[in-house]
Amino acid sequence: MIYTIIMSKERLNKNFLDEFKDYDFSKIQENKIYLVGSIRFKNYFIKIESILQILYNKIVYICSVDGLLNKEKFSLREWEKLQEIALRKLQDQDAMLVLDIDGYIGDHSMEEIEIFEKKYKKPIYYFSELRKNL
Image (cartoon, rainbow, N blue to C red):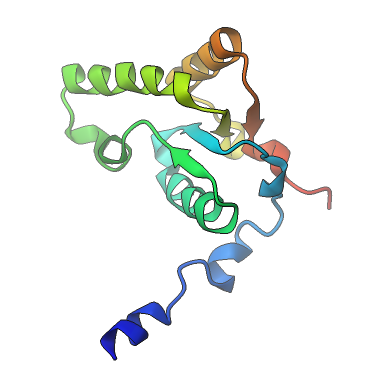
């Protein structure tokens, strides 16, 4: 009975999805997607990860969940290690989705984009470009 009550809720309900109704995630055809963007937009990471996985059956990667949620708690050495690992994760991805919220792309994100573009030559999508023509 309790299981039924818990499972009757849906995370991706109308209120959740309304924020993204003007975006067409179906443009992303590849399966393994790496999300890149500023930590200041961590709520977008969390929501878009769910949308891509649940609605579009994508495998979604980010640098570090703990890093995304708790950047200020890491030492410089720890943070640099997470960034090094993020760059290693890029090689296994099919495409990248840049969360360029309000046109902002940070320095580290730019580095990841540049490496992905020049070294791996795989598709890069920008959140702003997924916006439907209204």
